[in-house]
Image (cartoon, rainbow, N blue to C red; front, top):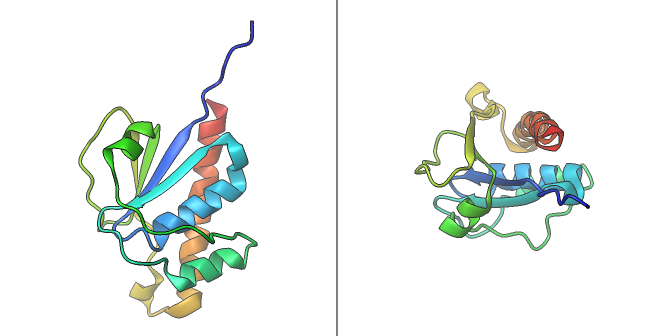
Length: 140
C-alpha cells in the first residue's frame, strides 16, 4: 500500500502584497519547487508589485511575471498549514488550524538605506527565514 503524503502549504501575508510577501513567496517557490504549495496575499492589497522587489528577485534568477497583489480570503487561509505574517503592519484574525508565524523583518530604511540596497537587504533577510521554514516543512 502506498501512503499519500500531503504537500505542506504556506501563505505569506503582508499588508499590501506587493513587496515582502511576494518576495517570500517567490523565494519559497524557487527553493521548494513542487514540495511546498506557496501562496501570498495582503490585508490591504495594492495595485501592482513593487518594482524593486521584482528586480531583487530577478537578480537571483527568479521570475515573478504574472504575479499580482491578492486579498487574504478564507479559502486561502483554510488551505494553509502555515501562515507567515511579514512585518508589523498586517493584522490578521486567527482563522482555522494553521500555525501562524510573524516575521519582523529587517527594515534598512530605519538606518537610512534606501532603493535597491534596501531591497537586497530585505530580500536576503527574508531568504534566510524562508530557508529555515522550508527545512521545517520538509522534515515533517
